[in-house]
Image (cartoon, protein in one colour):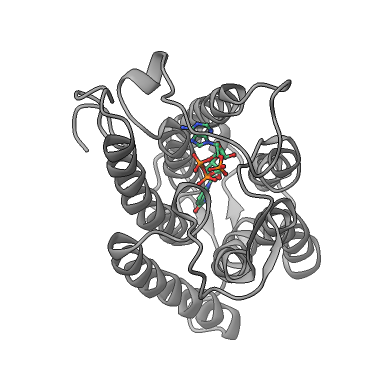
Length: 274
Ligand SMILES: NC(=O)c1ccc[n+]([C@@H]2O[C@H](COP(=O)([O-])OP(=O)(O)OC[C@H]3O[C@@H](n4cnc5c(N)ncnc54)[C@H](OP(=O)(O)O)[C@@H]3O)[C@@H](O)[C@H]2O)c1
């Protein structure tokens, strides 16, 4: 392989059983992201700002547990199992991808659910399952890819690797900062689960968009798909777009209805555009 190869890795033999399993699941992932975009555009998943008294999503479970089940389990446990038990390749690029993916989910699936100050202590079980099942599918495909693709030895100075990692890190910082900002809107002294209000967040990227936390994570997965240069990464990125675009739109409309003085120039997700 030479630098700037259109395909900088070697993966399963074309036509082999594992090839078909992988790309069959990629097609499923693509279809699921289209369905998700349509469903979520119509009505947002009922948690956080959009949780209502009328609940048709099953019995209630603790919200912190729900996030650990939907994100921690697939993003850490499943991903590690697939990488080490199902995969076959152990190059430095594979380990870099493993580290950033699991690093993200170590925060999102374990630390974030334990430290955030939720308004509601409980969410419907359907929220946990509705996150867990798609995550299992996409995380399986991605773990399968990054543990079985052999990247060229000089991939570390390939622009796709460098740009992708850079975007992932920038997105990670934005996502963490934006979630931390939301957390700090509810002060430690007055925080009591179940009796929390919403405030307008201000400062930095919040002056431009209502949901910089989603924007940051979206940038991360764009970076991921560029760095891994894989269809697995692309369908996962599409699925997150299918969640972030509709949900940021619902959040944005919710803010505008809730607060008369909501900054009129702010967009939902993409500065100046959307
Ligand atoms: N990969 C994916 O497909 C995916 C999908 C969804 C989310 N995520 C990630 O998961 C993380 C959390 O997402 P989320 O949908 O739960 O985000 P969110 O609705 O913005 O809420 C995040 C936290 O901030 C609180 N909060 C939100 N707006 C607030 C306000 N105006 N005033 C005071 N507190 C406020 C929320 O409290 P309440 O719970 O009381 O509302 C919650 O504790 C983000 O990092 C996001 O990128 C990833």
